[in-house]
Length: 105
Image (tube, rainbow, N blue to C red; front, top):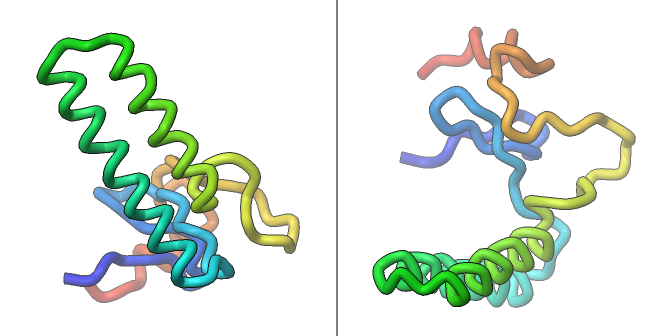
């Protein structure tokens, strides 16, 4: 089942919450390299949890954050029209509320 995204493509909707998407202007090879780095970092978080390694956990979380910033999912927004950010907001508390309520599941 494909992910539900807002009409402007800025957010994914997961369990009624908005999550910023990656910057669509990233060239595909760069986007894939960053996604691969993000997945590696997430696996490192899992491994650090399993081994109860605080230093490895700190580095792994830093690597996740670095990849997410590079993808445009965190940090300054990637759009340029001055629209505010609604990352992590509930859809029902955002300007997307009416659209979300009207869509067909």
